[in-house]
Length: 447
Image 1: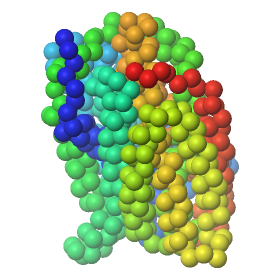
Image 2 (image 1 turned 30 degrees about the vertical axis):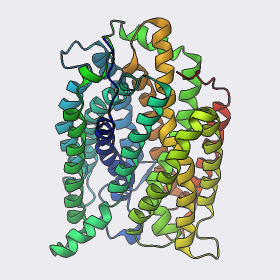
Image 3 (image 1 turned 135 degrees about the vertical axis):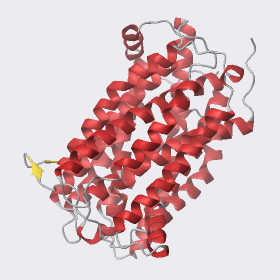
Image 4 (image 1 turned 120 degrees about the vertical axis):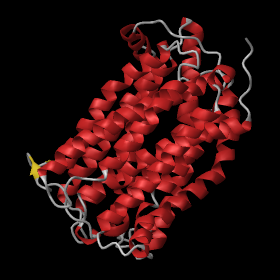
């Protein structure tokens, strides 16, 4: 059977799924810590204890780490279910469809604590709602990503589809970053006295939009028509062993791991950088994200062109080096005589350059690794590869949120901000490590 080429409208429909997932996951990344561990000038109530455990851990770090750990352990199982599926409608789409409603419900409930004041019940509630959300969203995103190598047969097709996927992801970040602006509008329009109540209504609206976007992919793409992949029969342990023994994949994962710790730090810390280091309003956050989106889009065509001319590896390495120095700039935010808005806009604009390539190329690179393995082993382990990748991504994000939260113990308020600045130094070193590791990667030949 000849595989049909995925038309442009279907590529855009594929991007919608990533946008929806991105809205949900970035609501968690952008405001979870800020909501439950707010700085003094936020106007938000304290919902859980701020006390340090053993002098270095705080409750929010432990909760997020536990939720992500459960989620990461779940990844290989949903991957195996997807790879082994014999559903007549496809291995991926039916699973994705089942995950949308649970993802919507749990994502909303995370931001609806049982009490609007500091309470142990909020700790228990947040723990279970996070686990529910992570498991539900994983059931969507693992099969979703496993579709990419199936829908894009050539190297050029993979980069192009990964570009649309990245567009969806970045749009999701931009939408999620508007949550405080939407919250302020709701609060003023409906005379809501509680800032937390207004924020909850804003979250509800965004999550409904996210679920609708995820549904677009499910309804628009006929998996059996545009994918010719076959059901996998290899046992899970064997599939994991084969996947983890792939030397090129090992290098990819280690570099990816370092990078995602760094990126999680910057997404978790953006509101702190704005409101504490620069003493600017929260509402600036969405403008910064829009700036990042617009500037990064300018470089998308260039990334696609250069990837075909000089290869993906050199672009990724260069981008990681650039990003490391952008993290270093975080440490010095507010210390320059330059206007505060100029500092943060400049930093975001420069960050969008390497992020343009780092949002596109890793999934295209992984799709090529998977294709090469499939041809050599005659086994289809697409979802397992993505599950292993996302296992380490989630552990990295857990580390990122946990480390960021832990560093806040050393200062998170105006005049006492050393803990926030330390995160900039950590991101600097992590991106350097990722860049050096990726120099050992052997780029697959074009296909």
